Amino acid sequence: MLEAITPEKVQKGLRSLSDKNETRLSTYLNSCVHCGLCGESCLYYLSTGDDRFIPARKVDLVGSIYRRYNTLPGKIIPWLNGSQELNRKTSQEMVDLLYGACTLCGRCTLHCSVGVDIAWVVKTGRIMLADMGLVPDSLQSTVNTAIETGNNMGISTSDFTETLKWMEEELIDEVHDSNTGIPLNEPGKEVLYTLNPREPKFFPLSISAMAKIFYAAGESWTLSSQMYDITNYGYFSGNLDEAKEIAQRLWNETERIGAKKLVLAECGHGTRVMRWESPNYMKKIFPVCMETSTECIANYLREGRIRLDREKIKDAVTLHDPCNLVRSGGIVNEQRYILNEFISDFREMSPHGIDNFCCGGGGGQLAMSEYNDRRIKAGGIKAEQIRKTRAKIVVSPCHNCVDQLTQLNVQYKLGVQVKTLAEIVADALIL
Image (tube, rainbow, N blue to C red; front, top):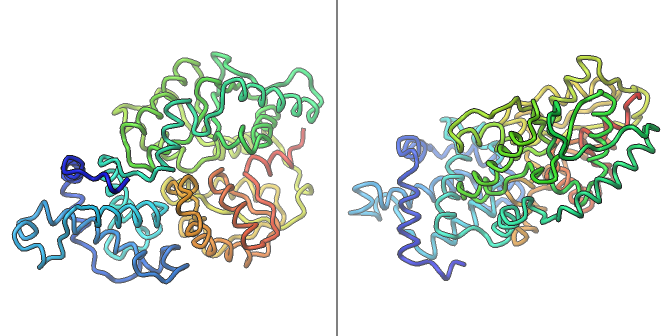
């Protein structure tokens, strides 16, 4: 990949960097005072002690390229202001640090003493690298699969419908009502529900859990076999054209089905892209109401449409906050309201809420196998947070987080159960 850097690719990357909001970018790049607070916020630096991973170093790296080609001193006397050429060496360093040592969690941004949006700068660097064709192969492969097949797992329509048929049979047996089911491609329903493809591929019980909640609430809902994937790894890769194409498909399917509301499955970055990024891609407002499954369940509880058994879950429960949902999206209280309605022993991590540490699985890390060891090591901070709560169940309203937490559970011998929010709610439903 890096051997193929050509002058044409370099020029394309430089144009991408110059085409960004230059005032915003130059302000951030020139504002860092190197106070070190971002280092104390970053799970990569804290877990390794490697100062290459300090977020300010990533800002400096992007800044050194920007100054070399966009400022007079950088063009004339680059050695005096730390400017660097965009070449094979600097590109390799950028790929390693911006993709391989950052989850875009935004915790460094939250703690920055001068308000630099470090995650945005890293994302800008990724966009430049994507324009140069330097996205790590494993991450790009995930995006390609989503573009080619309609979902990032490459699940065929026949396999998907067979999985739904099996889960529908399980649901009927559980609720003892042969009139229920998992509706597919039914137009004019109140709700169009989405899925993370990891559900039909690895976690099908999550599908039946949400179907059970819809059943208990008496909801009019449907799934689509054509476009159900809430994830969008184009956002992580930095290829905005591909991110827009994936988002556009879900926009189109929502309009085709004719549902009044789009309910987003438990996926932090998928929620961010559809709810807050895609209107910018499309330059228009989404055609119908949109809410997360977390908000949907909370509303069912408030309206009395579902009831939960407080005696059902005896074990201590803790909550992991997905970065894109909580820190970037502001959905902090709904999941806590839900859990406090029926969990008698709910224990917060320290820190929690918008200050919680990333699990280590975000930013496309789960898709980039070349950084697996680094990802698991960085996740040790989350594992220690969980261990200190002494909880037996860890809940997170995000499937990427659930996948990472499941791996951390094994690696760090935590001995906990890892569940989505829908799963633990479904366990306690009073039908």
